[in-house]
Length: 196
Image (cartoon, rainbow, N blue to C red; front, side, top):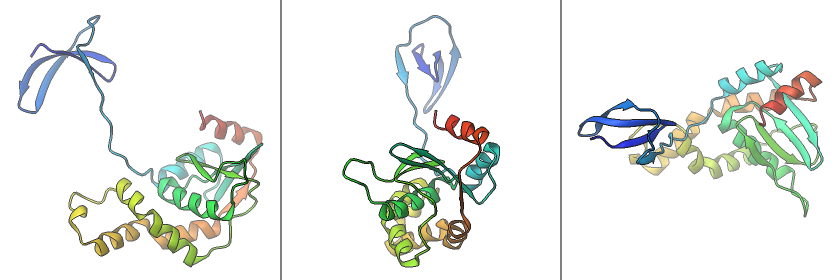
C-alpha cells in the first residue's frame, strides 16, 4: 500500500488491496514508482464496423475504393479484419511482387496495399479460397472470440468451428458483388485521413 504507479497516463497511489483487487486514488505531480502497461486481447474488427466507416467516408456497401500510388494501389475494402486478411492473401497470390516492390500487405483494418494497378478482383475460385482460408486458420483462431474451452476441442472440431465463424457464404457474396471505384476528392480526403 502507498505504492505510486502510472496507469493510462494518470499517477495513482494504492490505498487498499484485497488479494487481486486494488483501490487507488489519483495524485498530481508525483513521479510514478513504476508504469503499468496493459495490452488488450487481440480481436477482429467486424465487417459491420468496417461498413459503418465506409458509409462515413461516403461509400456504398459493396464499394471498394482504390487510391493509386506510385508503388501500387491502396485498396480500401472496409470488410473487417478477417475478410480483409482473406482478401489480402487472395490478392497476394494474384498480384506477384516485382523484384523491387512490396507484396500485397495489410495497411490497417480497412486498407490493403497491392503492387500494381487493381481494376477488379480476381474471379472467384472456391479451391483457391479454401486453400487460403486453411492457411489462415491458426491466425484467425487467435483473433476470434471462440470461448475459453476452444483450445480443448479436438483439432478437427476446432478447425470446423473457426471455418463456421468465418461464414464463407457471406464472404463469397461480398467478394462477388464488390465494385471497385476511384472515389471523388472529398471521399479520398476521408480515406487518406484513415491512414494517419
